Length: 315
Image (tube, rainbow, N blue to C red):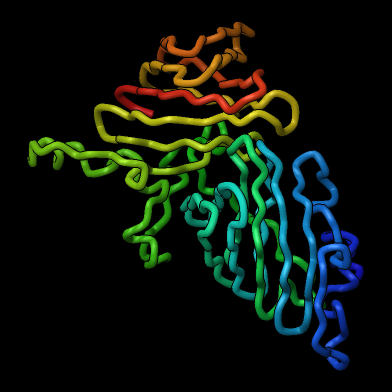
């Protein structure tokens, strides 16, 4: 139990024993004022979420957690049972760091996270997100404690400067359920291969459900949605919420092509860490960022800002 105490929070001693130990279970109503309240992770309060534990038996754990605007929980964790999320309020973005797949779950929608599958949740909106969470049979095996940290870098779009997209590729056959799914392996051929689209000569509509959604940045993440990503052009959008630790700032990135940035809602501040220059892009204006220039996006406002980017020819 000492392992659990170091890694989780005040409720570690209640896991699998609340509101009753296994041998004393009986019907009971647990109101919110009788839940166990904790934050996760407890050692990183500046990026934690609040958790209410209703029930935790030897067969099922029922909780609810809330993420503030701009917040995320980390590092990625995994559980000794299947986990279900049901979104009560807002929009939750969840990364599977082993495969690179990203899901945006809206109010009234649910997500299955299989046993031993690592996951990390984000709130990229300007409103709180509240999620009902159920795990069965166990959150963690008591003798072992929480799952160990991931040994490899999460598979994210530009998860670290200096890394290449090729280094983050993975064999789809290892995760057969991914073949029809949207993940980082489709960068450069979204929504279809460029040559294939030119051969067909037909038009392709990109609605909200056909965007390639990824997460950029491990420590200071933001959501990125690609409309197109092929051998000639990459175009998409990003959103920076207000809130979080300090001004909301993306992690640095460098492209092998010129970038144009349109501030759909702004202003968006672009910072160049190598030269310490900063540019404020007003709403409705465009900024050119030449290839090879390291840059970060910043939100110093009290609202969510959104940029539409185009990069050519290579990311």
